[in-house]
Length: 197
Image 1: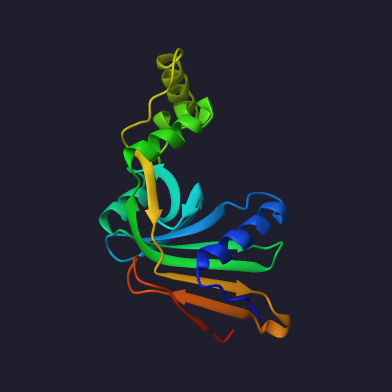
Image 2: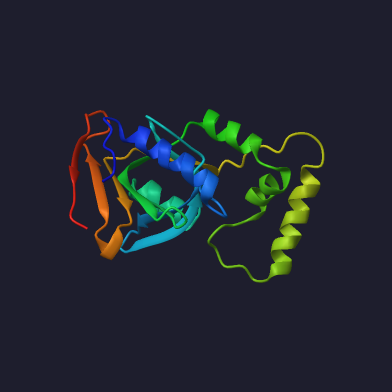
């Protein structure tokens, strides 16, 4: 059985710390599901850049497909799958933009090549050739030879404030352990229940 805690963030932090030690590639990788204007779901991988009582943070181009989805329909779902631990965690809830100060601080911590790439990439839009992308990277690199690279106005973060967090652990004969935390609003207390596999 999964040990129940009063605050699911404690359990998330413990599992996340284990994943940081055991995952061969990137324990921060998660699947992010959003909903398009016609109600069609879309999912892709992003990287977790922070979590605390206020939510789970990731960054992206707001003009990308996921950015447009989240601005129009500010709800999302996340899934962490740590294969080495045979565990996964699902989260669902409303999404809100991070503050400009948070986005500036994170953007400033990225390596310069990634900062230039954020300016050069028209994320999710058609690309005529790899050469066209490389040309844009060279152009933006030339514009920002000296000094700090400013954060593009269309590049920022989102914070998912979970209303549901489910912890899943693999079990023999597919008799998995599932522990669900749920609350009606981001400020409400959590309730828990175990689920059939």
